[in-house]
Length: 464
Ligand SMILES: C[S@@+](CC[C@H](N)C(=O)[O-])C[C@H]1O[C@@H](n2cnc3c(N)ncnc32)[C@H](O)[C@@H]1O
Image 1: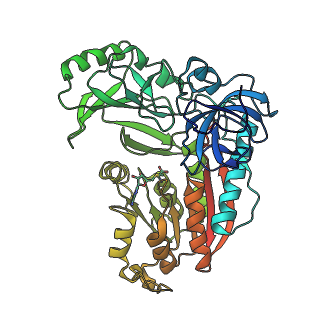
Image 2: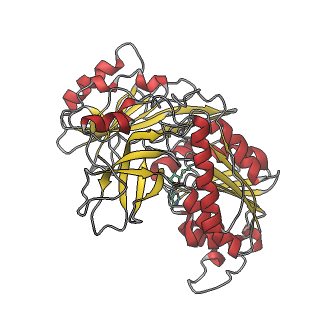
């Protein structure tokens, strides 16, 4: 029998009956035990009465974590069936096993998922940026009714028997998976789960949204038997064209085993080559949607100077180069050697584009010494007017742009910044800093770019 009151010495297998509270950043709802202890609960929906299996607990712990294992009163947004059995906590815990990550919102209908994401974005903006705004999370164009088949990129761990698998939440164990319904069919059709990949520690797969040749990349453990792996991967290639690359974990050398060491992506009238380990937006519709939305939000005009920060392979660089035209210029800054090389290759014939490899803060400090504000300086000075970018696209990784880069941009004082973020918390933190420096947030849009997960993409437009 379960009750809201935990036993005196709770452990990870205890079950509690809890009424779930609001959704929080990170994909869990917040509940409280009868004693007022906070429990972060995954696989539930706000308002539901559920039985929760504790996954992290302890009398001394500040808060506990748990998974829903039975629903006593369901929210109307709950699906009859989870979209993917290995990620369904209700099913897997029945056999005493944790669900794998990767589809932690798969128990909710898509509109319910979007409401949760909208609540998280609005809450982060309010709490960390002091910005009160109603956010609607927009469905991606042409979304599948169940939110499946959208990932053009996937990575898998490899277990001791050489089978591909995925990790449960906050767990290093590898659970073998037969298929992953969130990927585009071209990835599932490779049937990687049928291979014995002993010697590899991780597999990255990329399949271009437009249907070009997929690429399988292996990260190899020391002493991996390459000949045996070659033979296994030959089975992949039977009847279909697949590129294969590999890299030993402790090496910089990329080995091309078959085909080409990159995939070819298209969006609008543009073409990019992207390495397997390089960044590319993973939803099949994301490059097309963002290529329109982000540079338009930045509002670059012919003859202007645009900055594309955290540029990746240059998705936005391409549209910014079109917008500023031959009389303008685009500076793309990307930290990864591999991805910046991808970008440089793509833009060799666009004289108005320059690709700088390096960390954004360091490149900015070098190119605009006036922005290297000393730590204690309160109002950073304006950069030299001749170098000032007119518009900026800012698309950092999950950690956000951070204090130094925000201060540099405040000092550069462009006319407008389009800030695209995959983490609403770090976005809100940075927007708060811009606002305290006197900037205005003109608009916020959010996109359901990761259906059946808790992740959400947000686009904010800033003006000084
Ligand atoms: C979210 S991705 C965006 C890429 C690109 N805008 C796109 O949409 O395809 C972030 C990119 O920033 C790069 N990156 C991470 N930290 C960086 C840093 N400190 N300086 C420059 N680039 C960085 C990563 O390698 C990655 O390509």
